[in-house]
Image (cartoon, rainbow, N blue to C red; front, side):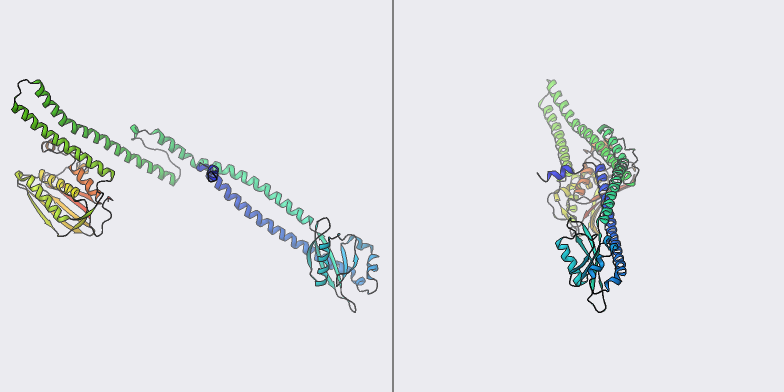
Length: 482
């Protein structure tokens, strides 16, 4: 319950927070300045009062000097001097007994009288005392030495009420001035905060106006400061990435539906043909079944590929990593590719360094390397050679797969790892490709903390280089590197 009170009192807007902090800093500075001025003025007034009182005491001593030298009835002599009636004066023996007290001297309270007597005995020059009404006075004590007689103590006083009145007036003036300054600071703080944050409101309004169907729009608001301009640039960059992701998602959905629709339509056509043709024999049914099996295999492969990509996008492709001899894995993949593409008569040579160790999922890495090697053989001409090398370079293990195929056009090179992208759609479909092979290979390698680089020249061949972190220096394999 009590923790909710500060939360409720905390300003919710940046403008209010800036204004509050501005006021707090101004109020703090004014308070420190006011205390400093007040204390300095109070000390100055006290010093002035003490100095005036000491001067008055010395003046009285000089005036009374002839009378104080008398040793007979000093009290009677002083009482006969009418000029002393208006002077706040007390003449005492050194032990404190009163010899003469003028009518102008304040009527002291018992504690104050004791302080005055003690000052006479000890010779303390300045003391602060109170009269019977509680008013404060400053008491000055001076000892007068007499030849052949006991010393005499002269005491005079000055009220502190004028000093206190001056300090009260100063405090009221500073409080009034501080209130005016804080009022002006509050208005100025709100004005400055509102003006400084006005572009933020424009940015928010412009961002809210951009809908999912208008991700091509950008924020054209100028923030008026380096920080807000950076915010606008960051939001525009975010919109660029969102637009790219949305476009990729739309294209992926369209391509996936097309790829799924093609075998489904073929199966539907084959079944409709069987149902409408009454003269279909057993051989025809078997042919239709064979076609359906082929289409179902293609659908199953496509669904498996889509699931694998979904796992990679969710970051769950490599949940458990283990040490892998990359050279042995590459050699195994090349043997499988060689057996699968034996009718094409494309030679595959492997140069590898022993014990190049990485960490990851061998099943998925085998899939990525198989896709790359199979892709190289599939697009290589009869009698050509696909050369594969495995070697460590600094912190990475590199698998380089080079073919002598038709190459990739420069305009297609940036898109080869996109899903369902084919440089030659007709030929890829004839060879059974779905356009996901390189995308799957790229996602698998990225899930293992690596990346794939590609260089190619038309009619000269292509080279795909797989970079994977070595097991001894690798970060966790599920952290992809660019």
